Amino acid sequence: MSLKIYNTLTRTKEDFKPLEPGKVKMYVCGPTVYSYIHIGNARPVIFFDVVRRYLESIGYEVTYAANFTDVDDKLIKKAAEMGVTVPEVADLFVQKYYEDTKGLGVREATLHPRVTQNMAEIIDFISGLMEKGYAYEAGGDVFFRTAKFPEYGKLSHQNLEELQYGIRVDVDERKESPQDFVLWKAAKPGEISWSSPWGEGRPGWHIECSAMIRKYLGDSIDIHGGGQDLTFPHHECEIAQSEGLTGQRMANYWMHNGFVNVNDEKMSKSLGNGINVHELLKTIPGQVIRYFMLSGHYSNPLNFSDEAVEQARGSLARIENCLSSLKHRLKTAEAGKVDAEMAAAVQSAQQQFESKMNDDFNTPDAITAVFELVNAANPYINREQVTVPTLELLLKQFEAMDQVLGILAPEAEDLLDEEIEQLIVERTEARKAKNWARADEIRNLLTERGIVLEDTAQGIRWRRS
Image (tube, rainbow, N blue to C red; front, side, top):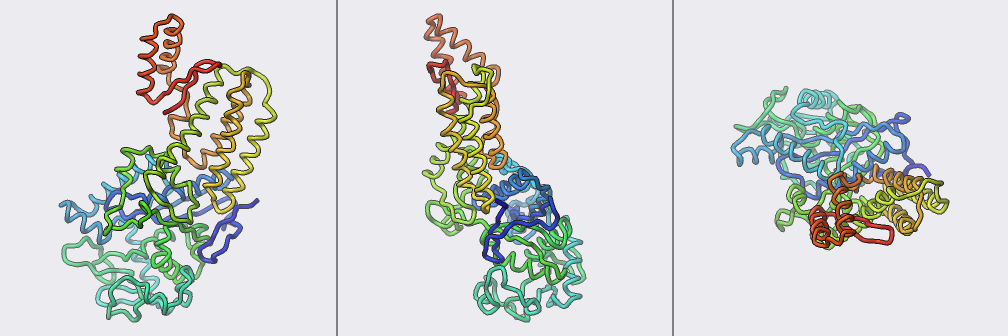
């Protein structure tokens, strides 16, 4: 089965065909760095990390760009509140972004362009639009002339009259049409600004991504992604700008993830129910958050709650405990051949996993394939005789699936360190010598380190709490 992607532009699942064989150019809109990212921001960060990982796992060379908006009204306001400069605010929260996304198991993108580092390209882009008649100046601001782009509205599937009611800005009498949007904003007194042919100012939001995509990835890219809320106006405006200037299709596939609600309510400032990832990581392991985000199809809404988190925690523990047991049994396994039944289970899980990921990156069903392998592996682990090649085959398949999903904590990928191994050996000797006090002391010590011991017929086994 070939990879199929649901394309917001066409509202259909389409076979994925890259612009260049074997290579993928992907751009995902990143955060405005005036604060910590919240769980709504975390969803596209995690999901498109999985998209990138899967594309690489099936042989594509992926160039993945995710930007930082490091100048806008929110940053200017934050800088004033903190008594620092806009670049200092941006630098602080870019660093916090890297820390928090690393905690979520997210790999850094190939490129993380910043608006302020691409001002010349943005100004040049706007100048090109003005030369082609797509833009006009009015009172130091520059606007995009939407009437000149007949396909405006093709992504959100609305016409210009309908879009007029969706624009959430005050009517500006300087505009030729209410649908026209700003490309360049004249600076207010005391604001950070850059020199341009239209005076001191800074770019509008939409033009930033268009200019950075063109600079780093070219006139046309394979995949453009982001949250559902960016479909209009942000991505709609990107298309108008980019395709107006270049005459080329901006992106072949548009992907949008659904919202994250909190306790069945939409996150909003008025409700005060926003949850930032930085605080969340203090009490919930990053892999649990990641598992939760991948437990629903990316296009559907997700509901964040204590119950959902605990369910994710328990499900993840089942996988990790299975892996821990597999690794522990390696120490007492025999040489020999791969068990035919387990080989068939591995092949089935692999095929199911790839089939679901090929179907528009269906992560919840791909996770089901992981559990199918857990269900097959657990009875095998408990057999009196197991073979090294079989255990290694099972572990290899779990590792291959997790290379895509990234849901296993790093410590779950390694055997116990030497200190803990030695403590287990010492406890075994203490029990033989009937030194129950020392045996209990060691068990308690290991419990504090998150290791639970289980005495079985095959010897002492351990699992992570």
